[in-house]
Image 1 (cartoon, helix red, strand yellow):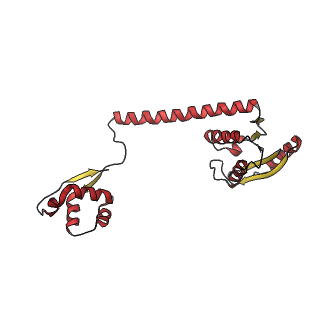
Image 2 (cartoon, rainbow, N blue to C red):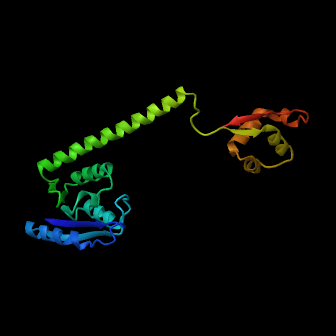
Image 3 (spheres, one colour):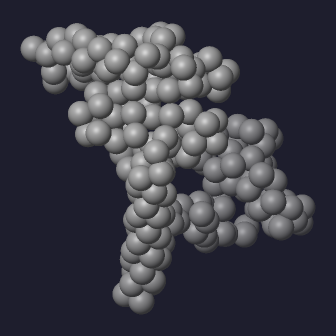
Length: 210
């Protein structure tokens, strides 16, 4: 059995020695008669990010099937959230890699551990459903109150658009000058038509676009 040790201390753990995690983890693996393939360390990294070099190396070696078991001090050393836990736990389960949390006496290779992982996955999905439902209800409530959703409309002066076109300004420069898209300029000029563009006496009102 080849085991990988993962240990992490965050930026807030200034007085903590990572060896406080490593020593008991090594002793546990020795008692189990396993071999240590590698120690994956993240010192000075917050658990709120997954962009941790040690974690990335660990998962890469897991996908290469270089280790059979991951041993950690506590779950919060490895995972940043319930969603992150479920995501990684399901991947490790699919890779047939055992996960052991020493101080919490959790072994996801056991039937009890697999049951716990499945229950946490259900709770995570339930949490996401609640958040989605709250967002939908919030949008519906905003519409009922007459609130406009999306970006605020942008007013464009068609008189200025026509004048710039008459002066021979290119489409791209017109779009930049009026802070609109090139496509919108093309479409608007096409709708106005050549006769309108040549009519010096015509006045155009401002229109609102998104």
